[in-house]
Each structure stands twice: as structure tokens, then as C-alpha cells.
Image (cartoon, rainbow, N blue to C red; front, top):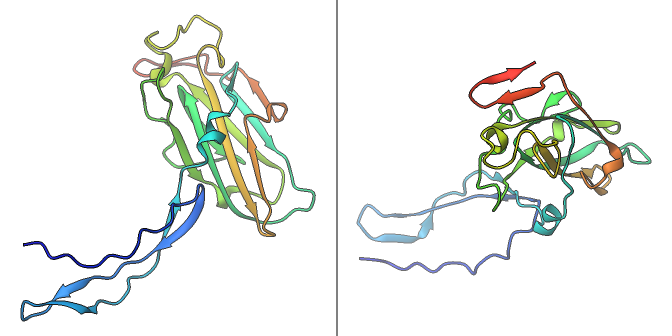
Length: 213
């Protein structure tokens, strides 16, 4: 038998790239077997909830950069340095990428990001909270690109073609920064003048056969 309990009205839609918190409580059956709808439990402790999705139009308008397998992006510094309150990066790669911030890994296990997808139809992006890695100014993003399942079998691209957005191994990124004074700025691969690329010491890599260094 189903018992219907009144539910609150639907909450407003979650906003893109926004922090929330949540908590719960429950209504239990009384020992007599009667539903004790007027005797709720205590509220649980609040837990953080992050709406990870950026604005889809922002991601779709990103520029893919490549041309080599090592990239460096210099994040413009604010006119007056302020501590970073929050910083999250949304990154996608054709192939796999390893992302670092000021010389530190964006995540402990991001060597094989993003997961494989049906590349002609969609490319997945990863979300990293890099607040603790950011400095008040002079922040540097580093990227190492690899084939992963994007190019190693010549299924999705031809490994003999020039590497880059029109061939293999490309990268796109959106960084959202909020400073302690409330300013919010973004940095992305659309800021092409802030990015440099070069061919690193890994000149060939294969998901199953290793790499040539």
C-alpha cells in the first residue's frame, strides 16, 4: 500500500557553476505502526553540492588549441591582487590530457581524462576544483596531451596528419575564477595569445604499446 505524503513545491532550477548545500531529515514509523508524520528526525549536517555544469554555450564556443603535445597558458593577473575564493576549470581533450596548475596536478588521477566517447558525436569534459592551487596572481596552466583512444588506431584520426585542432591531440578549457572581493573572471583557450605550445620529449604514444621518449 502506498501512502502519499505532501511534498514541497519544486525548487527553482539550479544555476550553472554555482555552489549549493543540502540537508535531509526523515519521518519514521512509530512503534505502534502508525506513520509519525508529525515527528520528524533532526536535520542532518549540511553537505556541499556543486552544480558542475557550466553554461553550455560557453563550452560550445571554446577554441580548440594544439599543434604540439605540451601547452602552457598564462592566466592574466588582476590589476590588484586578491586571494582566490573559488576556481574551477572545465577541460576537454581530443586524446587524453594531463592538466597542472602552477606545477601541481589538477587532480590526483587525471592522467587518462576525459573518458572515451563516440568522438564524432560528443567529447566529454572534466571539472576540477583548483581553488587551493591558485595564487593571487601569475597563475600558469600546463597541459600534456596524448593519443589515448582518440588516435591510436587511426579510427578517429590519422596519426600521420599534422597534430592540432584539425587533426589529432587538441585541448579546450574554461577557467572560472572568483576573487575575495567578489570579482568574477574567466580564462579559456579562446585567449589564444596567452597560450604557447611546443613538442615535448614524448614523440609518440600508444594506449597499449607505451611511448617513445
